[in-house]
Picture 1 (cartoon, helix red, strand yellow):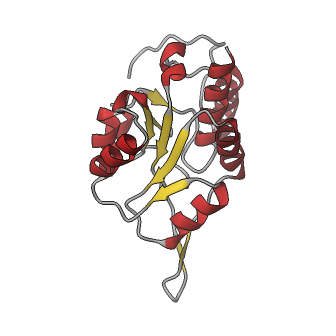
Picture 2 (tube, one colour; picture 1 turned 45 degrees about the horizontal axis):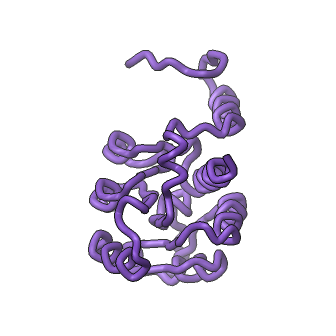
Picture 3 (cartoon, rainbow, N blue to C red; picture 1 turned 60 degrees about the vertical axis):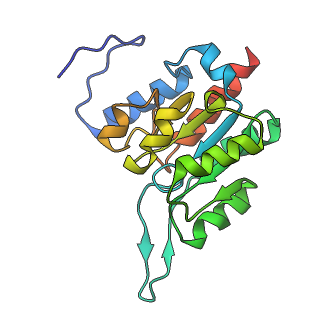
Length: 195
């Protein structure tokens, strides 16, 4: 238990409705807690898939076919980022399921999937674009993202990420993975570059 000063009216959270109200309050302020100049320095955005684009759950049918749930709002936010032409963007996933590639195609984003060593993959990807780790915003949610997040100039994670990731991320997004986390990131980044 710790005291945390806030820049909004105090709200006691006792119910799921209270939590929903607080989430709306945080989103309405479009404030990341990250310095504006750090947001403005971002040139590349790389995102894990499961737990970032999805709610980290998988549906498996009797034939072993998997499907996941994503957010249309997240998709809209990422579309705005992509259309601005300001950022290099990629989905980077350890997952070997074709659903990652299909979602990336729909979002018109580059994708590397079935990647075990994310740091090595990012070293190559950044070098091909004449970018450095300082230019990168990496969005992850679990322990296999930690090494990339530690190297990135800015790291972010959804609010429901693994505790070890919540403890080391520069920016904790106000919503869970697959439920608006990437839309809030998109809105804040777009707002930052307009200033």
